[in-house]
Length: 156
Image (cartoon, rainbow, N blue to C red; front, top):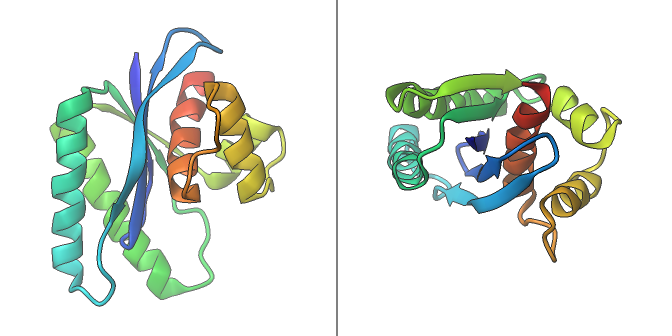
């Protein structure tokens, strides 16, 4: 089964696609980020995210989208912006007829590390180990997206 994980954001949206063939049999297909220029109008940024993510879904053919929920935000402006990016990502998944699963950052950290307050470095290292990579995925948005995909494989 192919799963795309999403770490939503308007400046940087992380994505990671894995193949899952059992609880601990995961293979990296592709991962990266979609960056949108700062100070670009929000509608333009959302269109860029939509177009980029639509192309990734078309090229990789996942059957599931696992996306990070907006759990808590201290900055309401950032929270609203991330919500817009989440909505666009979910629209891409819905249009592609993907199953959509949502997990909080706490659930993802707990699933990968056994500790809900794991650091970014701990998460990157666990993703590296579980996928058998030589280097931790960077930036952390990419690692977080892969972690979301891995969470689906373990919680489904």
